[in-house]
Length: 314
Length: 134
Image (cartoon, rainbow over all chains, first blue to last red; front, side):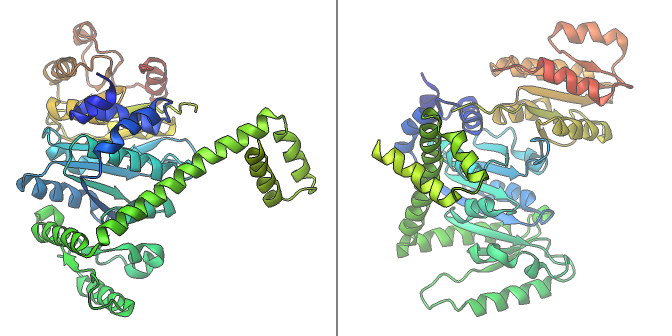
């Protein structure tokens, strides 16, 4: 039985190994993912982002517990930053999730961002496909949301959730750019702390200003204290409501199309770059072209367009 | 497409001792050496450690034990890995391990036993040289 078939049978070791192969750009991955793809699209994908220390991992842990109570199997992908200097990473999200470690219906995987441009979106997207193929009902993807590709990952989920905490100064300002816009649910975690009113007011104002239409989903603001399991049931209820809203309004189809479209672009970019560069290299024109650009005889835009035309005319 | 392989290591503290300074220093050193380190925190059962090792698909498991319970906990981890068909995973151990226990631990397949005074360079070098390459 090949590894793809084992994944479809829910074999944990095969799931784990295939995710590693995806992360390592193993040459057999494309064929294996092709086998899995027709069997996917069934899982409900939830994205969670928020500043470091906002309690995302604890929240994911408790949400996992709540979904398990409701009889759903859960996959978790926890993304942490890779050091750009050494390529190493310290992946500590599991510390808060070990209570589910021996539950065979829960699969938790830590991933480093590994730096390659756009590579993270592809690797997590493939990891989601793999967990989906293995039969997980719910897949939760957690990132700190630093950098565009991490924001994209969360935004391409069915239900993007943004987590905030009170008492971190002007927290709304701090994470406004590009992150607050993607929230379909806002969670104020550690809501037993001082300053919670301020965060709530700021969020409400921001949502008011966004001017949602009558039939639109207006992002609800929920309060949780993850370590004490407070507000978790309500959060999961709200996530389920959002999914129902998506399904009943055609929003789900749109989200799926958007995600597929983004995935196609990612792969064209990836494969396209390889094809064009290899073509140049095989013709022995790669370094000479670089020389010309260094001497300012050709500008980069013209050089790139010419290189692409050359492949097209071949 | 070239394969970009990065060594993944699970660091775990089985049993009841709460001393995690050492394992955190090791975690940093391995990260600085370009590895992905998954740390699972204190008070882990061998079952939790082995399941995490499987899901994270690590090639190395590093145990830190300062409670004196290594002769009960470490063999259990090795045994469970074997049951899962993951006996290719390198198991190392650090902590307070009496000389007399070392032959027994080596016999069950634990490689790299690091007592007090070990430098982080030694640990990094050992893992770089001994981590299974698929």
